[in-house]
Image (cartoon, rainbow, N blue to C red):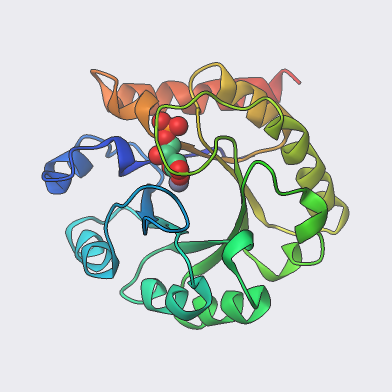
Length: 222
Ligand code: DX5
Ligand code: ZN
């Protein structure tokens, strides 16, 4: 199984994104956290900034929308060549229409659930999305501890994906480090967002490679 590492720039220097991106060239993609100060109690940046980011890097941008009204706004974020746009189940009115709108702009569509949202709530929606994102911390801030309760959710979603013969990616975001990545990978995750563990490291590309190896080893030994 291919293990993908996507550093979250929530832990990067916000006034130096261009040089920050160059320090994570070993990544499979860049995870971009859009926060509106309403859906989550934190504010980052919006559409103009995301479009500019895609212009200055060839790495795929994985845009995580932690905003209200994603139905209205997701398609705009999907323009400009970003790789994927993920919306939160808790904020959506029409998940299937929003997935279609994202895909119609050429991006992959992702669906995310917060720690208190049960997997059963999205059971019927999985087939409409290209990737499912399990939040393993309460969204809003970097540097929080990985919640062990997310392991069972990852495992349940992995079984749903495999039993239906889907190729859906299973992503986990929050508290991913060299220990928790192994637990998440063993449970069935294949795509890992890591903020503070990568950007807090003195050699970020080396940390990205170590995380990838840790995920791959956990799967091959389980
Ligand atoms: C949290 C964000 C995460 C965050 C992860 O709401 O969605 O992407 O940057 O940061 P770490 O890896 O430090 O938990
Ligand atoms: Zn995120």
